[in-house]
Image (cartoon, rainbow, N blue to C red; front, side, top):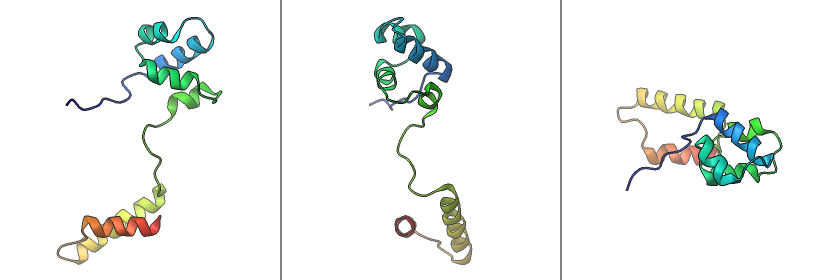
Length: 103
């Protein structure tokens, strides 16, 4: 099975496609083919309640992180310190347990 490819479209193409489809200048299928944007992604973004097109285009894919950037950096720093002090360092299970407790 081939790996899934995500976000193969450019932000400018998506912005133009959303504006074209919302303005009823052309349908979803035609706009999708013309601007080389997936139809399902375009449909989700056109039907979204978000009015700001720039926010729609710049949204990140995947789940939102549970830990903030600062907390994640602190966890990484702690893990590296523990690895330097001990011969074996921490296991993946130990790190997952600490991340769960922090969350």
